Every structure is written in structure tokens, then in C-alpha cells.
Image (cartoon, rainbow, N blue to C red; front, side):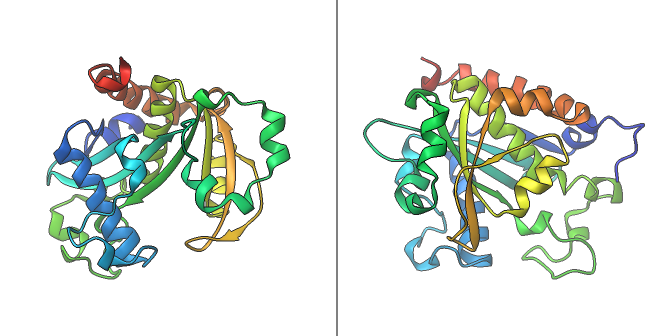
Length: 250
């Protein structure tokens, strides 16, 4: 664990950069992480559909994405995307998991569609999920990256940082009503950090057992653990700066 003497934000951002994927190169890096995780490692999507080794779908053309990069190796380490709700087409979970959604729950929220989004495709490259003694990656063991023990201890924070980056995206884009299809253990894990999702439907088989969940940006920020809030504020500053320089902010 990271000692209390080291501020969480400083410990993580010493080794990783978190930014909005604004260039084609950055966006392709997120697609490649997704391909390795969703196609090669877990088999959620058939690899043969993506001969360019980039897992991409029709929603990526209008989605916002964040990329987490390992500073010393310049390797893409993690990613996440935000898909804004449009009047002209359903969100991914509305298209593929509609039977899981609790329609009464959503109706009771009285959500305006231009404030709604879905967070999806959160992925961490396997090179940063395995530690010494575990299965080797295409880079060999983690030591092959030249990482110190202190650096390796920050690796579990990559997924948390990706979620914080997606929360920053909801705030800067005004899409503050958030849906996500998640494995049931993830909301329980996030709850320990003060991030409390509401269940918005039932479990279904979709890339494993998953269920729809809902949270507002305001609720996430109000209940976030203080040390994570410091990390969030640093990530938010970078994401906001990147966002304001794009066509999405127009």
C-alpha cells in the first residue's frame, strides 16, 4: 500500500499521465488496449472482427475517451470512454442490454436525455495488472518494464484513475447522469471509496454477469474519499484543459 506520508495523487501521477484522447494516435492507443483486453485476453469480442488490432464500434465516432500512459515506458496502460446519449440512437446498453434495464427506475429519475451518458470500455492492459510471480505478459514480467517496487504498488490505481477520468468527462461535458453496465463486484469495490452506484436493473449474461447501474456526478463527488478527491481534482484539471481545446466544447 502507499504510505500516508505520500499523497495519493502525487504517488500515482508521478508514474502515470491521465489525459483526454484528442489525437488520432491517442484514440488508436485506447482501441488497441481494448483489443488486447476484450478480444485477446478475455474473448468478449471476436478478434477476427478487428484485423487492425483495434477494438472499435460505431459509438466511438462521437464518444469521448481518456488514455492513461505509463510515463517512463510511454506505454498505454488504461482507457475509458464516455458515450453521450443522442436523440437519434440508443446508448450501447439500451441497444444490447435493454432487457436488463428497470424502466420504472429510469422514469422516476426524470432524466433529460442531453444530460445522460454511458461509461464503458474501461480497460487496463494486462502488463499493469500482473505482478511478479504471476503469468507473464507479452513484455515478460513487470520487472521487464524497469519499474521500482513503489511504482508497481500504484498499478492497482489505474482502474480507479480511469473511473475518476470518466467522472471528470461527465462534469466537463455536462453529461452528469451516468449509466454503466458493470460486473456486480465493481460497485461494491467502488463503494469503499465513497462512490456509490444505484442498481438500475437486473443481472444478465453480457460478457459475463453484468447489471446496469446509475450514479450522478454530484453524488460521486460529494461522497468521494478525500484522498481520491485530491487525485480527481488533478485529473479533472488536465481533462478540462484538454476538453476546452476541442470541438466538443464548442
